[in-house]
Image (cartoon, rainbow, N blue to C red; front, side, top):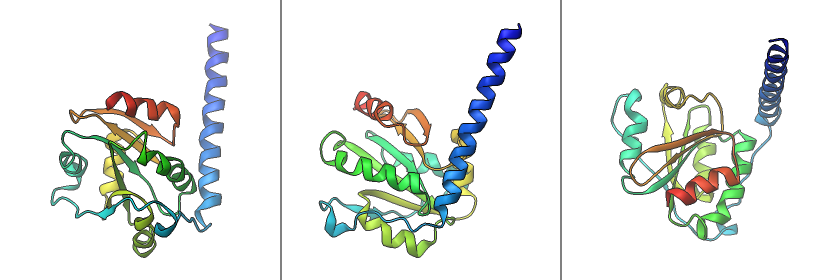
Length: 181
């Protein structure tokens, strides 16, 4: 019993330390200007700003996903000021032309990202983009059991939400996408 309590206490300390480190990293990087490659510096893959579905905020995620029925989708919930978000985008961008060429990329942000900054960044990020107003993002992240950026949602061709990730999970996430294809 003592061993179990000690292990549980150590796990809690590690989890709190990890979470604290993530938050500190986000705070430190929040004021730094994040820059993605400009469209002229990348292969010209399309970026498209989509109109938000006219639904109640609680139904926004389902309404967005309905637009991609029959496709494998990676939904990226991000913010313009989130350095880990932008670093992950840089890692994923070259994969969009080969390994992940059949995956539909959907990017969702909200008013925590200044709209003018977002509009300037969108052309350099291949995929479909949504800018949510009001409490939409908080509701969606709550539905997914996540509370931070970046959050990723893998959706298979049947519309099944396969897995949600908090933070870029590299090969683990890529393997789920491969399997969904």
